[in-house]
Image (cartoon, rainbow, N blue to C red):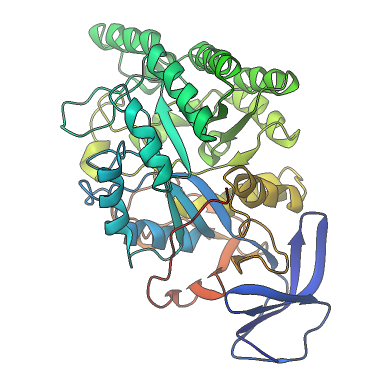
Length: 452
């Protein structure tokens, strides 16, 4: 037999541990795993000294095409993902214009995405007050999940996304439960955060510390409690996005123990940065919920290392550089981070804090693929898609602006030293990123389809 690709001599990360084996790839699938593969191959990769693991499945990415492609497009965004070790992603229903709240808007995204993605991709549908009658058509058109905001979203731009009221969340959960779907929720109390923000700005309190204080922990916890209560009432499958506090994680853990079908994600920036660092980094590190104080960040680390966080996402939310100017209340709230998901968290969690590498793989690959019904993703196993990354734990580098693939080359991690490196990213057996060559070949990403 002649394989398309053989990966040799690597430390291959399986769900039950790490073994030094060879991987044979044929027709975009993992065809053979053996101690030694002696057959011929069109391409052989020597992974000596490196971890070989499934690529990241990032279920929280904002690509702004169409409508705001000057913020981030499919081509630039997927290049950054490939360079960072992501092999599949699910794109949020905002910040493109129009927002993905009906089939017509979804079709615009589907058309725009063709032949532009270097990694595989899927889409969310949005839940907003005016589209309760559009959820079924979105589900039938293939969205992988739905997303809504409890936090305040105000925009005077036609076609932009809006947040839900409690009635919309309740009725939306009923419909999504009937459709067998998942509702992902941005959980912050909109009334308290909006009034605190107005109060601080009126008083001239516009520092980084004031911004953190305008979105206190309890506003996240209360919104999580409310979402879980509605999920209990409706039977809707629930996923809480970018949770930033241990207190909210504990509420979710208690709900799981009561039988609620709920999962939770957090993001690298909540582990890599804290509120005390925000004045120095500035608006590049502004996000919602905000970075938390160091003492609270340490509690979030305890939740991650204890297995109480289901998976990690980037919440990559880019914008043009001018939108990151001014005081932190005025600046756009979103972090460009997708290029540093894997290396940054491998360094922080595996190397510095001793998380088992197979648990790390659960956090970046297996768990999200299971929740989003992507059976061919998330695991190195025979018959799975050959979505594979090589990570060298002995390389170090400094994040530099000129190395970023984003359309707008700014990052909260600029100048940061990271003590490991993604050296290759392989999507369905095709090398799309190589550390020496950069992005390789043409876009080969395919649309993801969930298993029903």
